[in-house]
Length: 284
Image (cartoon, rainbow, N blue to C red; front, top):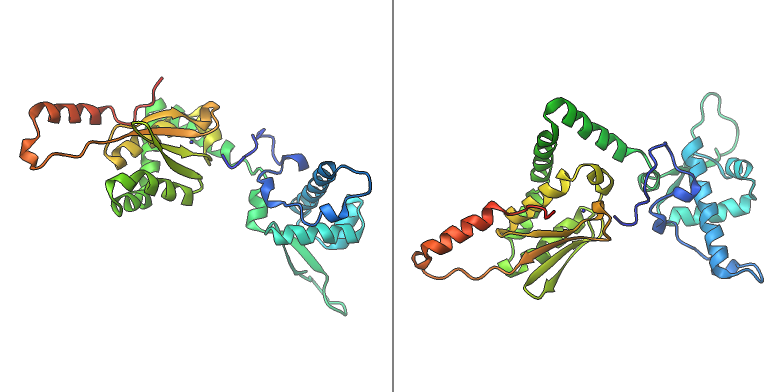
């Protein structure tokens, strides 16, 4: 139901190698500066590691000047500036004027570099642990698994307005594609593709995958919601939370309803009702 999110240990802030979303820390200009004889991939890895150390130092110590970063990390100020330029370009840090408390000295205050919201989100902030703890509390105090399932359904219903609007604005044969676009806008990196007897909705990232590992009700509620939204039984084939690479939902092709409506047989009505009653169930 992840954009390459690293698994969290739940032990607080990660080390430099655990900076996730490393895609935002790009290799800016590294190829030109590869030392003679050093393999380019090794040099690039070293550059990323040092860049992560710079960002981590700002996280641990707050907005910092170039001189402060150089002193803490044992780097030259020129090297720190180079890494900061790349981090600024990638919206990981931003420069600002240093706040002066007390009497102000002559000259302009030194420029400091602070993490942006994007840069701060690149570090583990234990949000998954907080969510899992909250769901565990609900299960223990409010009615076990059924209470968690009720929360999961309420959660997906609350955020489903945009999905419903996207579905209602297109023809039935374009609904899976429209749902994929709406999911992508919420960070699920979703795509829809044709299958032999239907379509497959693939979610390549899941923002709640680590919590869903412990509480599959989140996946089940999402599957039920997709079935209700698309007006047909759907089947969840794989989930990131269960160790699969992609969350995959199969959406069968729905036959066109006959006209007029009075021509629908009683058997057809019973079959439709039976299908709707099982919509969204996650296969064992």
